[in-house]
Amino acid sequence: MRILIVGGGGRECALYSAIKNNPRVTAVAAAPGNAGIAALGAYCYSDVKATDISALTKCAADFKADFVIVAPDDPLVLGAVDALDAAGFKCFGPKKDAAIIEGSKSFSKHLMKKHQIPTADYREFINTAEATAYLENADYPIVIKADGLALGKGVTIANTFDEAVAAVSDCLDNGKFGFAGKRVVIEEYLSGVEVTVLCLTDGADFIAFPASTDHKRAFDNDLGPNTGGMGVIAPAPYYTSEIREETIRNIITPTLNALRIEGRLFRGCLYFGLMLTGNGVKVVEYNARFGDPEAQTVLPLLNENVDLIGLFEACRSGILREFVERNNLRGKLFKNLSSACVVMASGGYPDKYQTGLPITGIDFRPPDRDVFVNYAGVSVKDGKPHTSGGRVLTVTALDKDLSSALKKAYSEISHINFEGAHFRNDIGYKAIEFLSLK
Ligand code: AMP
Ligand code: GLY
Image (cartoon, rainbow, N blue to C red; front, side, top):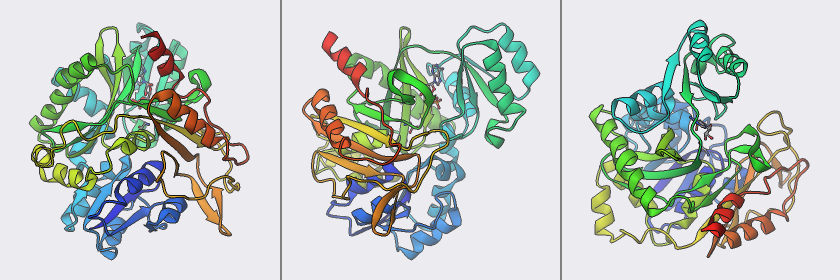
């Protein structure tokens, strides 16, 4: 099979590594991919933007793709799967009418309210005066969210009335997020521990990856601005079997049912961003795709003999349960190991940063060990790797327990360098503390 991966970050690098040794896979391309993915062996259509749907369709035809994995949020929300499907290409990823669960926070909040799925209380506004009147009597902190996709930057946790009004005004009056910010959701602040659960689903049945915990703030001790994610550990120790049962009963199954009832069958990877609160598990957000860097952490936990492409095809065809049973995969999908990943970012990320800086200590070795690098913002100039993005690369390590995995990841990262390189030093520390108190 010839596989085309749409996207060009660390998540797509991890997807490439997860499928390239599959005996059914004969060739893999990525659009646009990146220099690291290319160095690992995939053909990269580097001029093609993941949001350029007609160019993607041309790519799929040029590559004679048998199957296309659409990984990032924006092409999914724009309808890339619908277009590729109409052109005769089989895809993994939800169609536009289901991807809206990520594309519009207003849609997802309404869906949860209608179907009684636990989440933060909320109101939505398109008018600053009305939002301001509401904020005058609200409890703080409070959360302001741009309705649409905003590169993970559309959420403000406001501690005061003035901060909240400024965030609303940035969206509704100042056009900070363009069309995505023309509507805002204002929601109750949830406190607790955050956990991500990624589910492969055919719209009816699902299989869940081990729960993970991302670290979204830029700096140690959860300080600094929100980023796309600075590091992840899995399995998240907070996600006990009782919490898992509660999540399946109150959130995962009702969400899949709700989407089906609304005529928006979701086939792909559904990302549940959860808050474990004192009042039960609540949904913080849904994404219509694999998380990044969550995917880089949980995909390597799949057992070597699991046919991931087969699982993707089964999701697309609505036969996930049959596929799992036929291949006797129930309870045998994942390694009994811990996984940790640490992101190395450009100095200044997620705000302004410099690119084009030489990187030392990476060799584009295939990820055939239990510690390896996924490439995201990496380019090659004169045969040498250079930085080309905010999140530059990620080190992922697997080991028998979380402490050993983290030790291995940090040891590897200490050999890699570029000017201004920044990574968090405290990935997984809270989880280790939690485990030691148990
Ligand atoms: P989102 O893009 O909706 O995931 O929001 C980004 C991050 O903001 C989340 O991962 C949380 O850390 C935080 N956040 C979002 N909504 C809430 C909420 N209602 N209460 C507390 N934190 C939140
Ligand atoms: N790591 C968070 C996300 O992928 O949205």
